[in-house]
Image 1 (spheres, rainbow, N blue to C red):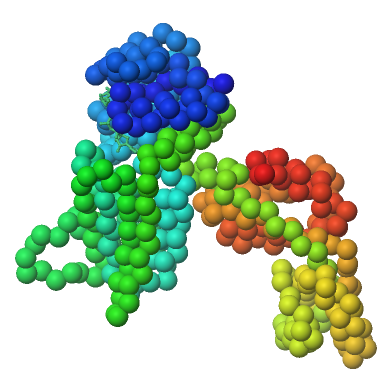
Image 2 (cartoon, rainbow, N blue to C red):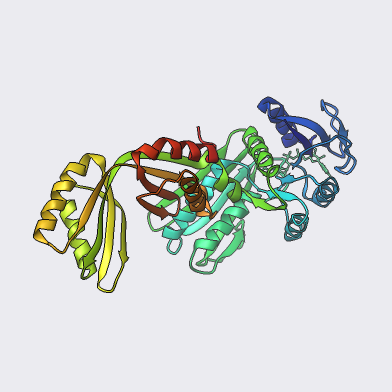
Length: 405
Ligand SMILES: NC(=O)c1ccc[n+]([C@@H]2O[C@H](COP(=O)([O-])OP(=O)(O)OC[C@H]3O[C@@H](n4cnc5c(N)ncnc54)[C@H](O)[C@@H]3O)[C@@H](O)[C@H]2O)c1
């Protein structure tokens, strides 16, 4: 059981968090902190983190920005990791967290939802395609009691877009100037505060005669609480340092996916001449109706190169015939068809922001003494070709490492 201190326990999120922690069966609320008190709490409540007498493993903070300095000081005194979920933080707060992260583990996220983090990734992709020609506006909506505006998430989305768009970007918060046209490079950011809206973020890309809108809607605060609990479980295992959602996503099983299929490999070790010969080989396979994948071409000795590609196992028989015919036509070509292979693909949006996934996969292969026939990596994907007999042990190790079902 992870023993939790809830900072801001009397607030809306504090209460939702306490409930979610108990319901999870993995946490026990050791104490709460709130200078305003909390008469309903079923755990001791203190006015500051330093004053807490109960032993604990981690602090989750859903309070107010002004509380941060005291919370970090209390966490340092008690040598406890902290998850900072409070929003409306300034540059000074960031420096405070970075300073504390020299001594304890600090995790910070302006939005604890996985969906929002996916929205960030989609917005980044959309901006890289549309950013130079489409106007971008961010509209966020929250309940009437939210204090900071625009939301921390809207600002994080804006920063994400800014890092991708090629031209210089200027943020425009709410439009009220009369008689001024929109300038190129503006990102408009608008806040709506009304009723009990849990949280809505729209990223709007508007071009000539078309609009693309990416939208995330939070329907209940419980999603932020479960994200914060995940973050707490993540940092209790971590050494001193400053951690963000991207780090957790990269290492977390929730966004990883494993796919396998039966495959074969066609490999040519020494192809003489230019890339044109590789082109010809690929063309011949393609004309035989064989889809090729995981293509790797490397220049070996002067004037020679190697080429390999994977194919679906159902095409192996045809590939054998194509290979034989090719070699009969071109006696300088020497290719091999490897069958009984398995193509294993590890997917995860986290790979985009965090290095090390390929290292982990290689480490697992090494530990199991499995020699892959081929490996290819992309932004969010690693594909391996291994002998079919190694499929089970490799999958089991990957599932265990990435916490996959
Ligand atoms: N990161 C996320 O995913 C996420 C999601 C929801 C809300 N939030 C943020 O969490 C914060 C809290 O939200 P809320 O809706 O619960 O607000 P709230 O106003 O209902 O609660 C804030 C609580 O903090 C308490 N507080 C004030 N000073 C304190 C101090 N020095 N130490 C400890 N507690 C103190 C207040 O008494 C209050 O009970 C806000 O910044 C909000 O934007 C973040």
